[in-house]
Image (cartoon, rainbow, N blue to C red; front, top):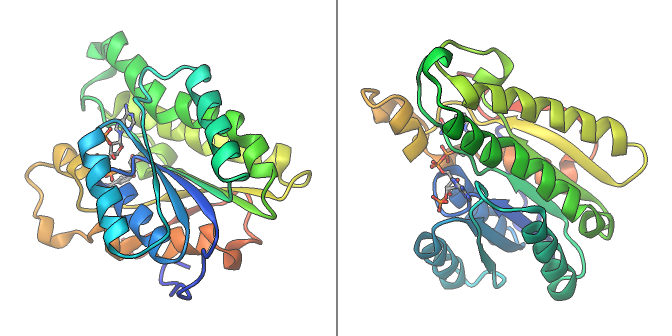
Length: 249
Ligand SMILES: NC(=O)c1ccc[n+]([C@@H]2O[C@H](COP(=O)([O-])OP(=O)(O)OC[C@H]3O[C@@H](n4cnc5c(N)ncnc54)[C@H](OP(=O)(O)O)[C@@H]3O)[C@@H](O)[C@H]2O)c1
């Protein structure tokens, strides 16, 4: 699955929302999904960075994307409902969500972890994927088949000292994915799975491991096989799984 070669029209006519689409893995996945034929809804905080991804996709002659500047640290359910209404109006349905946006927060002992920072990390990394999925269920139900991908981390599966709210939010994401899958897997045509990208050369990785040699890391564009497999019809049999994008690490 991780070395999956996507057929060129894998996502033709699909509508896919990617959070954290302005940078790193989300940016690479959004561009890849557009190249494979999807109309991609790009969501992130930084409007200028989002606009650059938007322009890049337009320059590739892919389906026209949409751009949603939104701060997931402070967004409330009304913002997600507004997004659901917009998707309903503009596209009529949603075929996939890649929940990718996250913040690292400080690498620090829990004893010194500040409550405001805790809340911010939990809002972006766990509360937003929950509320966004909940608000967009009617859009996902309107698709023939829909794929929801959550983004985990190795510290979400096995916690490590000093990784604080980030690790705890990622453990929560694994549970969130399993519960959606168990509750809706048999009742709907929506599948819910989780990807652990593994060490990848991005701004987040640099801030977690500033002394690391970037030459040793894969680039976001190099880890997308599993992202394509789970989003497209070839991964339609998978439900409630937690998979590694780089199982060789
Ligand atoms: N890179 C790795 O080695 C690695 C390893 C394991 C797991 N992961 C996971 O993979 C995913 C992508 O990570 P990455 O390394 O690509 O990170 P990144 O380069 O730091 O990108 C994070 C993305 O999230 C968006 N974001 C952050 N805060 C936001 C907010 N408040 N509201 C809306 N969007 C927000 C950022 O956009 P703006 O700044 O424009 O808001 C950016 O597009 C994350 O879930 C991360 O936990 C990464």
